[in-house]
Length: 68
Image (tube, rainbow, N blue to C red; front, side, top):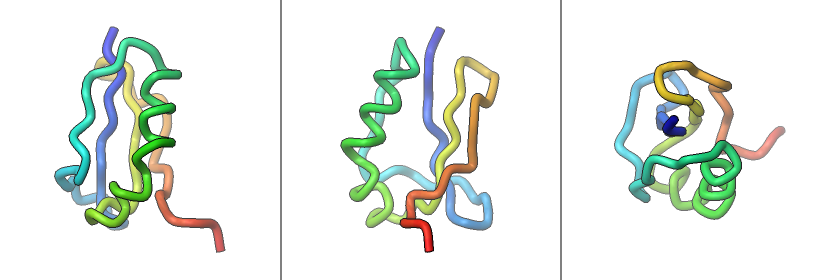
């Protein structure tokens, strides 16, 4: 199983991430990576992310911006 992130603008358009992720073997590894890189991803143009396990979306969109 592979865990992957999809990076999007707020309108759902896919964008290339500023920090290139790997394919993760666990959900925890994927979430830890996002926690370490979310600021750079947001600064690079991503507004939200989706987490998938293989072809199944687990959750998202999840904003990379602080709650207002």
